[in-house]
Image (cartoon, rainbow, N blue to C red; front, side, top):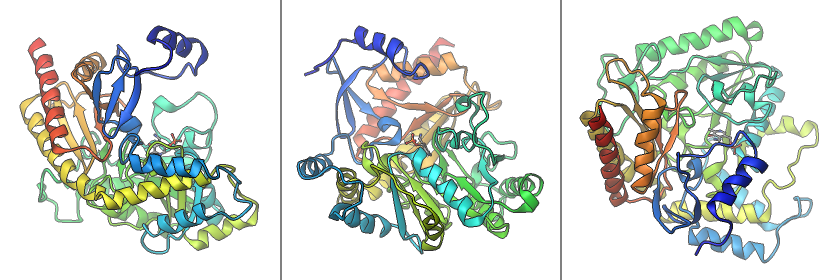
Length: 456
Ligand code: PMP
């Protein structure tokens, strides 16, 4: 039963007392009051299938019983010490979390959000390399702190204010919308086998993007030296843009040849969501020096982390560094429970199975509807790009995207939206959805797309 103010009073508070830059999804906003696993209920107790998971944050399911139990148990015992005394939780959790990483990624810093994690990662890279200037990719989102506003390269998130000096952006290797293509040079479970002419590892488009990255090094970095390069394996906010195979490998080589370290932003792609791998960077066959994570790490509890090598961490010992709430006992208990559920319930395998099925079914919609320009992704990190027509790839006008989107919501499915033009549907549900949920989602999307097509 819903307890709390009615819709009008909530809308009024939102208008008058909350951050004016807040945006609400949908023309008729959804007023939710409860969640369980892959479902949300609004205040009229209408149930929705949640395919966006609070922006890719609810990893193992809304209010997953094992995570709730772990939080509840710890809340009754001890909440906080700021780590000035020893307590078991942060140590148990740190050991469990770093065990999920390959190589020498052994030291973890706990934060409370993804922005804090990326802020720290960039600082660490600069301290370690002694070079301030860094590179990110256009269309990447890495956070909204003043430091990170210069790293995030989506104009929609930029204030007209000097922030985040020292970052240059390289061209985005977008296989669908980028000028050099590479559409068939990305790993897709729906298109097994490569469908382009270039031999494995020698994608021409990919090489051109790498050359452009080299240009940024040559023209914009101090004597070609670089502090860090940061990228996601699949860009989240940017509309599930999947880099062509081999891009990150070649980019990492160039960065390292110029003295830089490589940061993998796993805020959206981590914790098994890719299906084939636990971490997004593994799916690209690279080994980062610093990994940042947040969102799914806590299944909706505010948490983040940075994992790095002992050598890089050592430079941070030159001054005091601490985070009041990072790794607090409750957060650590939640984080442990999430890791355990992912293993126990074979969440990564489920992402591979259900995600691949989802992508294949979406491919059918792409074949049926002119406006479905591109279907991409891996596991349960999926994007659908809507266009005016397949030949021009012109983004579908915002009002048409909004009307399809509103219809899917009215039929009980909540989908994310993103991309620079706001024309990408983002499907990144709690990782507990089933094939039956996929069938329902596809039926709803098909009905909404058909209605749109009939209007033409
Ligand atoms: N990195 C990525 C890839 C993200 O998607 C986000 C959030 N959308 C962030 C960093 C920043 O995380 P937070 O909002 O927790 O600061």
